[in-house]
Length: 453
Figure 1 (cartoon, helix red, strand yellow):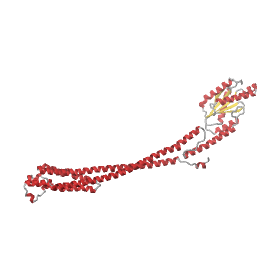
Figure 2 (tube, rainbow, N blue to C red; figure 1 turned 180 degrees about the vertical axis):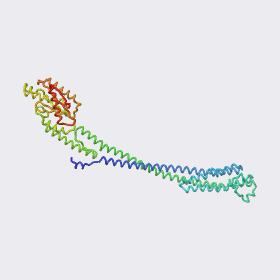
Figure 3 (tube, rainbow, N blue to C red; figure 1 turned 90 degrees about the vertical axis):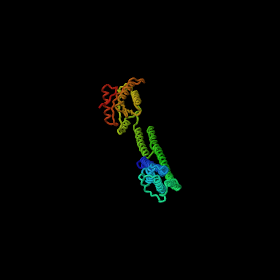
Figure 4 (tube, rainbow, N blue to C red; figure 1 turned 60 degrees about the vertical axis):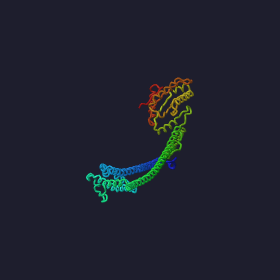
């Protein structure tokens, strides 16, 4: 397939998918964080509504307790004429100040002015009632003949009416009791209680509305959060599925095809399809080269191994391959004597026997060739000097077989020279191997020697 056809490949780009998934995940994470913040705000508002309700209840209780305490103290004074009750009354009024503090503290963060106004009215009515209580205290103090210095300034400032000044001490006491126990006093206290009740009702309603609103916002936010998390979960599942379908599965298919020495199936993302097409192009070229090699490298008709022409073609191909090689050049020792003594027919049988043993002794991916006459060669691919011992053992084994024939053929032996190349076939490799073969012949033949440089 040419470059134009490769450009027309259709498929999902891994980079585009990756960017899209990252962008979608980031958006969803931002939305989840945003909704989580809204949930926190909603929870805070809901909690604030409850806290405000509690503060309102505390304020109402403080105003009620303060007002009732003042009532209790003035009544005790009227009944017992004990000045300690007056002191307690004014300590509450000026120091403890439960009523005033409650109204002031609630007013700092009141979100319902109408409800706050009811509480202020209750305080105002309680303060107005104190004028009546001061007058009753003055009447009791006059009836008991108590010194003015023992009375608070507010009581000393009270001026009795001319009519009340004419009353007897018992009359003054009776008048004081009427002022703090009578119907008018009770009505005033009831009015204070009514304002506090109005405040309570208004505060409850406001709190309820705030709670309903906060709960509604909280529910909507949590619903959105569940939706976003669900979408994020689905996105993760989709991502995993796409990774499996577009990356993992194609890789598994490619590994299987490579193991089975087949062309790759066109599958997966755009990048994998492009890779498969490129690999298939190379595969086809290699297959064509191998076919051409098999076609051109004609086999020797006598021995069935590669002939000289095929050997030369193989060497040319291996010159372009950056792989380690070992070359063995082999001569059949004293083969001329076999031909002369036993005839050419026996000589041919010996050559066929030598070729068969060589072919059987070396690996299936090694190349055995007959260079001519009694000269053979073996090209071992992916062979390194670490295999020297193995090669020597093979040669020794072959010589033992040839020197101990069981087929009626004459005894022969082989002289073998070996050299290695780290990067394909070179002219130096052939020369070095021939030099190693010469050393074997010079030292008595029937053996193997390696080129040492």
